Length: 223
Image (cartoon, rainbow, N blue to C red):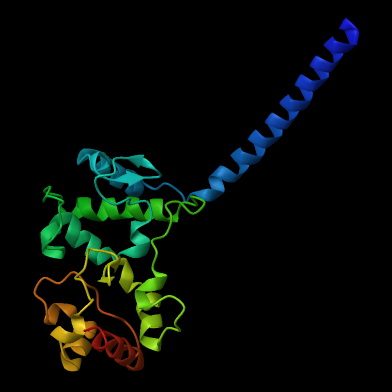
């Protein structure tokens, strides 16, 4: 190959790949705005609370932060906002085993922080962080789930509760809950947790009576 041909090949090749680079950049920039909801004043206020209490010193969002405590990128998808507010203001009142100290977060600050976390939850992160393994919470792999087990999963109970070591840890372990409480207590607790457990952070289970009964049937098998 002559020097002139080599020079032309270099120039044309550079222009070709530069054009591809511009095209990919334009395509990416066009999609970025669609992957995140609008940033409102409340979202900004919540972000200021996030920085004020140095939440990133223990937690992560979008993969940034420390790994001493759970990732909070999608936390409002898994935890009721009423629970989050109580936890933010007084962690041990919501979860006696919580390691997070009481930071003195005021009610208004907690509301703003939840708005910010709700915003991060709605950002399209291409599946990050990975969802926890919940399938086995209902029983042994390969065995068809009962109606109560299906409801346990569909209501997101495993986001807070553990059964046989699988699930969240912000609520009590339910592995042997059927040996601790009878049907009357369980049904009543599903309908109004605070009436049975003082300062309970668990929200009421808003479901038809038939579903409450099936959830209770499942709980009574856990002994």
